[in-house]
Length: 201
Image (cartoon, rainbow, N blue to C red; front, side):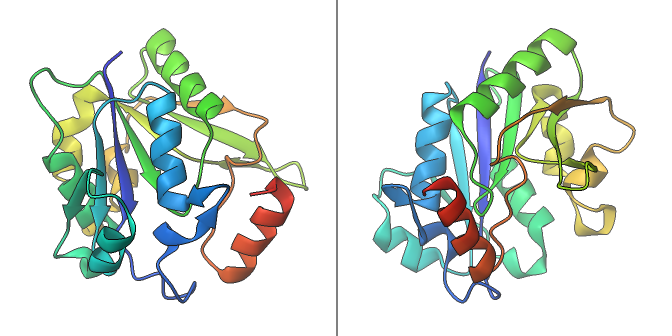
């Protein structure tokens, strides 16, 4: 499958207090780790959308990385989703599009499993799910969409809830995965430090 990806890294990281894309993670940064994972999982083109911390990220990360600047980043995540989609190659059209937030690191195994399920199921999208300590099921990340939804991604808007709006009334296959990264959301310093401690990252 021809799989491409959008990594959303344009936000202000206000609750973290610094650019989340550049936080240390394993032997690199969150952004560096995610790009390595996607490449190892067989993902082709990767669109990294930057905004608030664009210059800082560009200086800290090798210039060969595929950055896309979103001047409208402050207007919401949907603007970054549409901007990232706008640079994806359309000839040939991708079979699948992975959407990943920079503060939600994943693993090669998770990405490869989502690719397998999308291919086998013929669904519009696949999303991993996990159970919390109360045995409640939650949607996790990343989300893998059929390439047929690329035009819808280009039209993503905050008013229609961004990715949620793109997937409205679509067939989304939910994939139970026993992987601790599926539910990670490193939105605060406390969450980040707890995840590093738990995962040895």
